[in-house]
Length: 350
Image 1: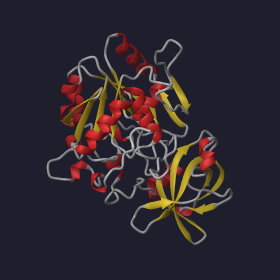
Image 2: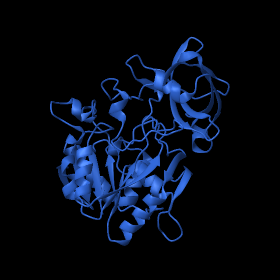
Image 3: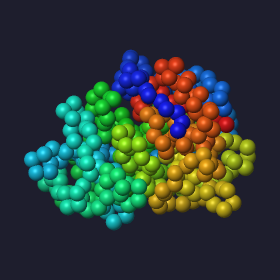
Image 4: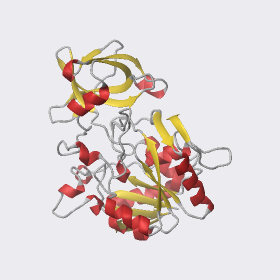
C-alpha cells in the first residue's frame, strides 16, 4: 500500500492558516508540486505561474454542512454525524461518543430500532446499515428523522464535524470553499471538499486572467472518520453538460484537465462514456478509482495531505503512479508540510 505514512502529531494543521499570523489569507499555505518523481516546493500563491493557458480546473461546488448534532439515547450523550441524504429523504448517519474534549470517538453502529433524541423536539430511528461495504462495518446507518426537517435542524443546532487533531471548534464559514454553492434541497458535504480551501477570489481572478478555465461539478461528500480506513461509500454527484463540454474541449485542444480534490476526480471519472469523453450525468456514484482501473479524463490533481486512506492513495497512484506518490509523501514529511483539511496542498502534474 502506498505509502505507509505515520504523520507526527506536530505536523497536523490545528487551525486554519489565516489564524496562524496577521495578514495571512487562505492562500498562504505551502504547495508541493510533483511532476513524476521530481518534486518542487512552492507557495499556493504561485499556482497561476505553475499552470498555463488552456488548462482546466475541475472544482467541486458542494457546500459544507454543519453536520454534527448533539443527541441522546436514553440518558447517554451521543453526537450524530449526518452524512448523506438519500433519495427517500432518509439520512445516512454515524453515531459517535463525545470524548470530553469537544471532539468525538468511534461508537459501535446500530442496532436497528435505536432511537436518538435530537434538539428542538425531533428524533431519529436507525433502520438498517448501508448496503455493501458499509453494511459489513455497521458504522453508517440509514435513519428516518421525525420532527423539524434536517436542513433546519443543522442550521439551528449543527456545527461542523471536527476531529481531535484540530485545536477548537470553528465557524461554518471556515469550512466553506470559495466555490461552494448552497443546494436547494439542503444537501451538501458532511466534510469540506478541502483541496479547494486555499483558493481565494483574488487567486481565481488571476488564474482566469492567465487563461486557466474552471469547470464546476458537484459531489456531496459523506463522513470520512479517519479512524476507519474504508473505501468511499456511494455519493450523490452531478456533472453539468457545460462542464462536460469544457472538459472535452480542453482535452481536444491540448490543455490539461486538473481535478481540485479527489471528489472532483470521482465525479468526472464517473461520467466517462464509451468514447472516452466526459458527459453530463447526475445521480449516485460508487466508483473507486484504482491504478488497475486508471483515469480516463483527469490528467492531474490538486489534493490535500491526509492520513493515508486506501481509496485516496489508490486514486493518487492511478493519476501519477506509485513511485511518484511515494516520493511526494517523503518530500512532504521531510519538508515539514502540514496535514489535514487546514494544511498544505499537493499538486500532481503529468
